[in-house]
Image (cartoon, rainbow over all chains, first blue to last red; front, side, top):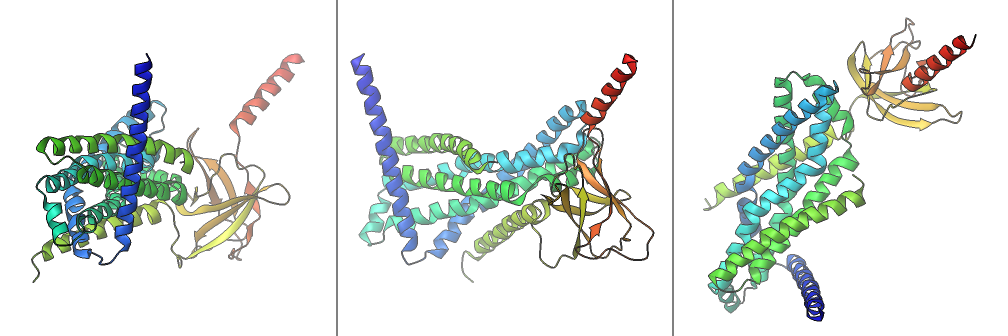
Length: 257
Length: 153
């Protein structure tokens, strides 16, 4: 029994230490971002890998999620004769929750895991040490552009996801006979800039910070073996997904959306 | 030509598309007003607005012509509703505004019936004739009350 309590205590201390190490790492990334040179070309390259190459999965998922929301919403609203509210239902669900959260989860799976694997492999093959030998700080050259690009692309991807979702709901809704005018009017009169749009973008940026920091930290600290890299990649996906969902609750509660 | 120019172009297009999506969400759906949009603001005082909300549509003959900008409580404790309508509309001064509902449980909106005067409403003026929202519960309450009174006789 006492052993169990001790183990629980040890796990808690480990968890808090890990949290502290991640925060220090985030601080080092932020500090690196302030230090010249700018590394603009590295940043643009990372925006390409993390953002542009995620476009297809984001747009297709957005369209599918919007379509299924339109179908489910239509079937439910039809019972109350309120199918005119379909635009409101689809739009608000996407803007407030599904857009930022699903985009972040998809990006974690597609781009976050790749980031960890890439940095992890560089650790395992001593490429980061090679950079240090040439007196290039890998924190500045490898980690910082990746983390910043993740923070930058997340709101853009989320907005595209939402627009494609609204479009998907529109296609399905109008196919089932919802008036296109009332779909759009419902959206326009129920969405507010401060509560919905700003809140949604804020969520996306915070999720971008989470995924960016977690994926680079896990790669940077992965054990220099093939097992270590694969374990780090798994940890990235698990930690990022769970923290996105937990943070989502608290942002919603604090922002009041 | 730099080797990764195509990639830079792709990134540029991606950023533009993302910004366009954010702009669409903010301006079209979020209702952020672009300065220079030609509207005039008129006011109407109602005794009861029911569930009217800001940004509710304003219609003439069922056609969308503007939206509710703001709802405040006036000094005389009536609801003062600020309405933005397109500036090119010529609304006679004796026009009337009424709060109506789309469907039985639908959203409230404002319908404007045109008057016959030659003078037109200017920016910042009040609509004199108003018709308040009908509160369904109150109507039902009155109906029950009346039925009870009659059965007592």
